[in-house]
Image 1 (cartoon, rainbow, N blue to C red):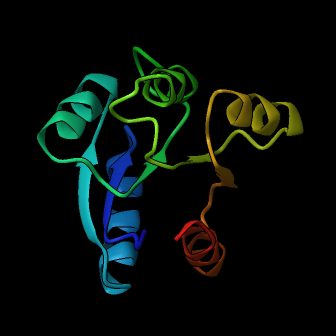
Image 2 (cartoon, one colour; image 1 turned 135 degrees about the vertical axis):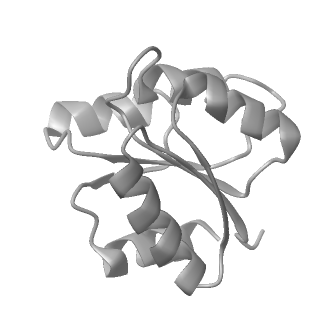
Length: 121
């Protein structure tokens, strides 16, 4: 399935702007959410082909939200790439166990991110 629509979930305005700009320049339609509640509303409105998920956010964190999305039959097919400053191997393993398909550490390398997205398509 080609990836065209991406939902970026991050509580940092700077990251949202950076990722949105990068993805749009590469031909993707981008929607953003700043927290778990916002992300769930966006999912209900229009299902993306991919979710880029921050981990450290107020309220429900990215690990919890990834688990909730991956276990919901309506959304389980949507791949999630965790995109976080948490760079420990244990964090990566935990994220993958929650249902993420891939894991990328901030600051995001544009070429790395594009190759990870291509690998999912």
